[in-house]
Length: 380
Ligand code: PEP
Ligand code: MN
Image: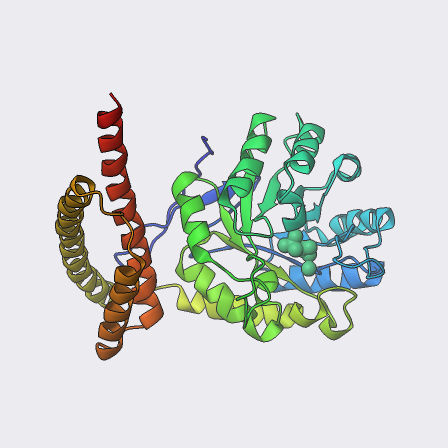
């Protein structure tokens, strides 16, 4: 897919300019993130106005977020104010001057968002999982040119995330950004949603020009962890942050534990900005260490080639003598030996075992290919 690239200039000590990516009339980079902030849910006109005024005064927020219809896990939880909240957001925009973004989960929501001229919409994690809903939303948005943020699906399926972006692109949406909000997992602790940063790296590789906004609030699930997640997002060069902000977080009707005050957001963003410029001497040391890593990695791939040569020779032997490809005892023995070696060398045993599971998987696959080839030869 071909996402539009933004360009920009960035001056700092000897560092390559991070790419400035654009989304609607907003732009951001890891050095100067696009900041989207506001409450999890719009709860009252007063709460919307109070939050927006404080954010506006902070001067860092570019887009005000607020949920109007809330997808809740269990019925009976606060499900959002609905239509009335749209009027509050319009009033906020007129009086405070911040553009706003709301969540849409079906065509009816889109229709109402368009009617109030929402400045942008986001598709939530529970919606990105469902191609029917995404398609319905895309059709409803056709021709509107409203910028769309696509949150990652609840579970770690990159295809669904990319697929949602593609569905929007196909109806003519050019103003697209992805939001990384973490993934449901039984290993999420200490977070609410496991970050699985590697999925964002893969998204960046496959769609290099699309901005990726991190949502540390939904990853953390706990306000004490929001700042460190935001720092990681900046360190790995995400383009923006979506952070839940509430004037009295403990009283919030949804996601109370993870919301922070506007004042705390102001400080958090100042800390991130202060950490942004890296000194060039440090960069030189990092570059030198990376050269060493490249050497080691090259040697590792050479060794894998050598290993695979032996695997192939062994495969031919097994095929010739009709020996089964996979021998469970040998596999357990290998895992045991390498696991013990890892411990002796103070390497994480699980890491080394995982690595060998992958090496072994491809070795077995290679031998199975030899086996299939020989069977086909015999059949011919
Ligand atoms: C939200 O942003 O308030 C929200 C419901 O997010 P998600 O879809 O990421 O759970
Ligand atoms: Mn929320």
